[in-house]
Image: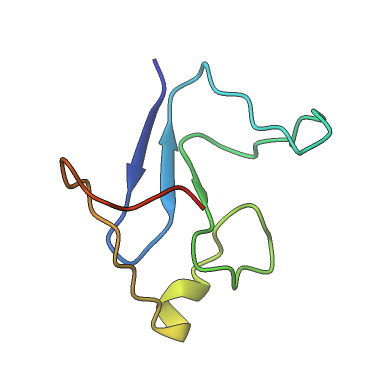
Length: 74
């Protein structure tokens, strides 16, 4: 089973061996190790993977899992 954890002010942490990461054309990305982290701040130089840039730029996220939230998908 795959598990994606939204890290506070950090990346999406993806755990599980049954996860395939693909681009918009369906081409798979090679995943160097597991678990892996996906960039959420937009500043990584190794997108889609996190390289720790969120810490250097002071990324602050507002998202939280709030039942009944009025947030809408992008």
